[in-house]
Length: 114
Length: 113
Image (tube, rainbow over all chains, first blue to last red; front, top):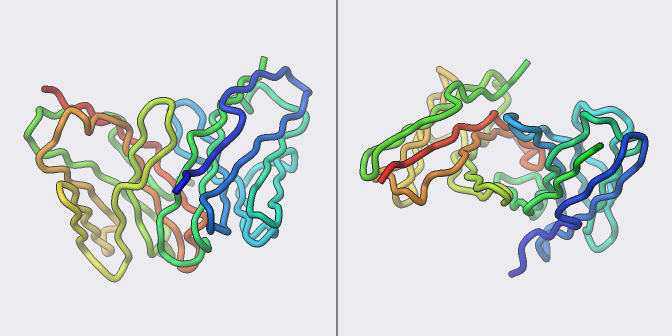
């Protein structure tokens, strides 16, 4: 079974630009969550999508948005990039996001803002 | 307010000995707890979990203990192996909300040969 795939793996942008990150969940998984990890920090929850609807949202500004498609693939968008947005962005999928089961993570997209 | 805390940023143990990683939480609504392991340049991988109705769960060399009254959980690795060297994250989620996990800052475990 293929794992969670995130593209691209690395990205360099400049302040003020916008960026779109992509995540393909494990086949059959309908819940997709996004997390941000900055150096020395744990993973901070951004949002969760299920059946093309945002079900949960973390404490991030509106510059961070996402969406989910009918095939459960998800994209995350960050507009007006700031230096502090430099981080590893991780996507995780699970069957339904309700029942007690672990999330499966991709290897992340490392975003660097110059 | 950090709801999940791992107070030890790092831990070093000798190969063959026990590794004990600790985690404290503050949110009483958490009912599902997990440990993930992360190697550099890779995403976290699930290690072991426990629901709030249990106080212990074991999987091979890995055992997780949950003390609900103290809002504390720990991960025991016995015996520790050099390949266990990684960053370990404690995570928790509320009832029916496993898609939204709250993570600790991680503990870097180094197992010396």
